[in-house]
Length: 147
Image (cartoon, rainbow, N blue to C red):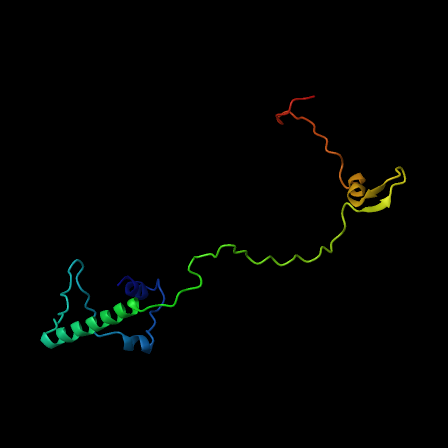
């Protein structure tokens, strides 16, 4: 209603026609059920005599098949939870040989000492030239006492 009035006044654009498939899918009447009113339930036909007997026979046959499947003997499982005495699991596969750098192996002779040094010791003697030594200065709000 407001859109039509806006179109007449010129404040809104022109109303476009709906596409043909939209027109075809709409029914002529737009009757909606009232809010709060429950529509009548559809009539459910109760089975009569022969229909009840046929359904009961079908359900009984299904129950008999299920009972027969449950009662059927099954072969014993090798995985029934029993472990034979003296059972030992198979040994694990050996790990592949280590091919990385050798550590703690005598590598070179130190000029100052008569004993050969290890790679680990050589790297420990090296000083980093990339960083300055860690100097901790206490500031006003650092929470560390001045020494």
